[in-house]
Image 1 (cartoon, rainbow, N blue to C red):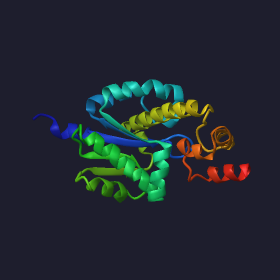
Image 2: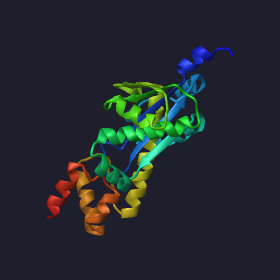
Image 3: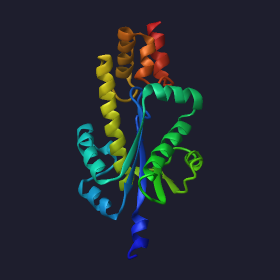
Image 4: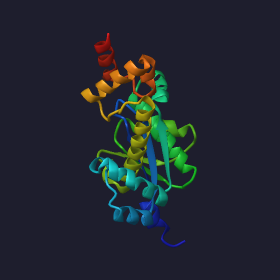
Length: 220
């Protein structure tokens, strides 16, 4: 029974998402369980917030993180995202649903009493989504949560999955789908509509973005 107290204080689940501000591609939420041992290993790997790491390096690091840390990744593809958004009509609620799902999936495999996520809205949203399944966990929402190693590891897994899915969608429509929401993104959306028709846009893009109106207006 040695060392249970200090060890359990280190144990935590970090949660982060990718694709929230990208017109194309899915919304991906990752949860990663970290304990004292894997915390040291993640430090050696120089894990940090994925926004400070190149895409290429993110794709290299993700498989190593998956190998050492129990994790879960929830991917909401554009079509499913658009359906959920039409029902929920609120991005924070949709994010909370995804966070809760990632957390619950991971809690089926590990025992942990603490989770850390970035501050994006009312934490009750996540806790309410969780309590339907009777989970009891202390959820800390922090600004700049990515400074925590567990959240940084989750940010890398979420971004790697997002990049892989975006690449796959690009090859399906035969047009490079850029990240973000920029003039290049609008141009790619026009290409998709010209090649495949307007209906196909919903299979690669998050339709509630203002980009949709701008693109459709320019084609009218």
